[in-house]
Length: 300
Image (cartoon, rainbow, N blue to C red; front, side):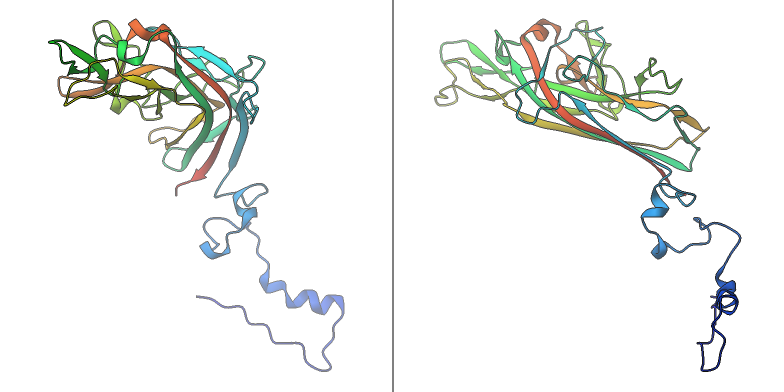
């Protein structure tokens, strides 16, 4: 590779402004530093955010979401939803939605050049009210109760799903839709209940709604209903990466939405997350605060 050679200052050499400036002339260049004339090892924070050198990470955004009270003194509560319902949108303590705004011009993702990376987290407390998860009429394991009958036991049914939506129309942020590869769990799968193939849950994160244990098992028999233990406060988080492959796309904002409860379902050899509408009113969830962040990065 080329090398710049500059002899050291020697006794008798002039050290006025003109001579010193001339010594560094060969180090100057007309073009700004960029991805094509700078080696990886030279990258520092100025290359990632801000200024003319932000070619690796052109944009970075973050904000708080939800009702941010880390002591859980205040929080929002939502109930379960039936097939066809629009998902709950994460809101702050005053009931205002908390999308991540990408500014008046949004961020433009060039095809096969830029990647949008989104990360989020939220403090939650899933609950069952009035009836336990073992009252679900299907999606249960039936265990002998010792008297010729059986008791139903939790079989993975009972989770809440969280996913991402974005607005690619304007900074008014009034036209949010599910991100690519993500469904809204309202496609009817079985018995009139909505759901989605797991392959259509690309931005989905799930959190179980209950911890269940069998009640007094006796030689493989369960004489009584199982016991549901509440989850208590816990956390859920997610990540989603997207690279447009056909045309460029401008994104103006993203947000977190959620719905539930859902359970596992298989039909025709395909795996789904499916609603059971009959118990939607018996599931609820409290949520507190969290964070939502996004970065735009070059992939080539």
